[in-house]
Image 1: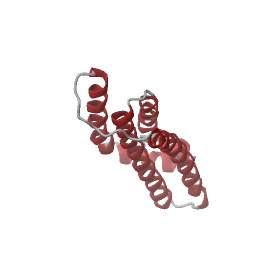
Image 2: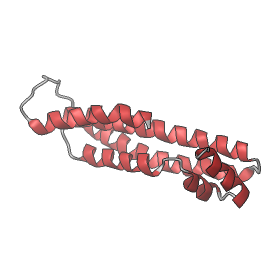
Image 3: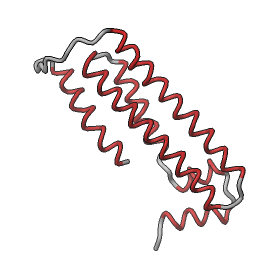
Image 4: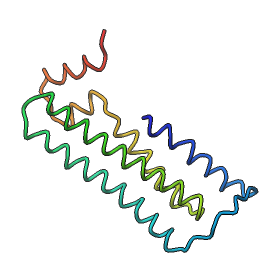
Length: 145
């Protein structure tokens, strides 16, 4: 969530800059190809993070130990959030230099995955198909008395 807190003000500032139309930062004109590459990278990385996360979570089923499962899940979640952070930065740069609405859409998609991917006890239980005992351990660990 810290990554989201870091990138949200950056994107917000760029969005407000673009929508105001009054400020000029005298930015260089970049070739259209750069904008297309940024768009492709943004969309591609959103897809890649989802596919990689699912692939990494499937490794959980190769072990029976809860701690090992949680380490796999934690690494997959960390990787996912780093990729989404990169997507958000790419969208900020793309919006700053090109002003295309596609970067708003890609950023909104990244925000969706930021919120959906939040590791909650119920999400961990369902993704890793934990038994009742392990699910209770996760629930208790998330809400200590």
